[in-house]
Image (cartoon, rainbow, N blue to C red; front, side):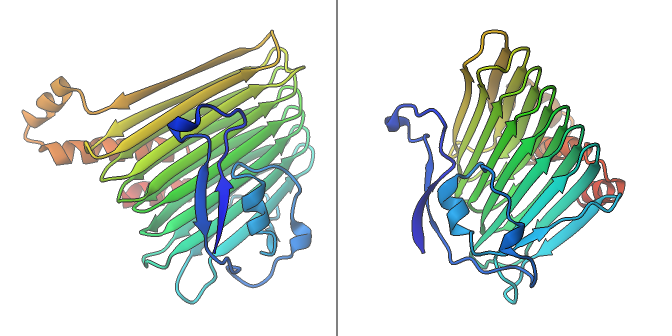
Length: 326
């Protein structure tokens, strides 16, 4: 095991807030599934940072090919499999692809890691769907993407966590008129940490970025959401927005939300916001007056947030199967 720093903010704030980064003891990572090659690795930045990238450097990388239809991989971790997986996707000019990653285990086995790197050429369109049901395990999910001119990257993350989850996403919009749209929905609880780090670097002109996060926290979980939109010099005409809505089910939850906008260019438009709290008393009373108990109310609202994100999954078979499981 080694002690590393992950999910660092690109612009540091007061250390006393304990939000600049996360320090973790990572496990010994062994490959999940045979095959792949480190030659398939893509040299781009990811959300968790260089130390985590180095930690996975010996894990083979699977090159995910564009088959013309949705590619669905269901990673089911057991005590007979490894605990680390790396994927790379490169789309040529004008290509389109949907990739669904499902991470599942019903066992308590320790720590797992997944890294996904993406390069989109001009006019390429890519949708990444991640459905995480890792139960009482620590899960590291690292993503990096570079976008060419007029390319589109859609990210849908559904996270159901009963232990510590660390998610890092870094998107570099090099190309003019590139577009990044992200939807995150989560239910996180237990006694662990729930740590998310989004960094979007907008270099190209007239780029667009939109990050929406809706979640439910319960138990004794300590949650941190870092969302940084960075308008680089030359990104004139670009827009960026981020918003998080957090429902607190228990008084023992600790929540930290840090939306950040950095600006090196004048002609840009950036917005951010956060709503954090419990159910409105009038809304709760209304539902209880119709025979719905308080716990059931929270459960309904939690499932509604997850279902809203799942409804955006473009692969019908994946979408319908997940919604049926709620």
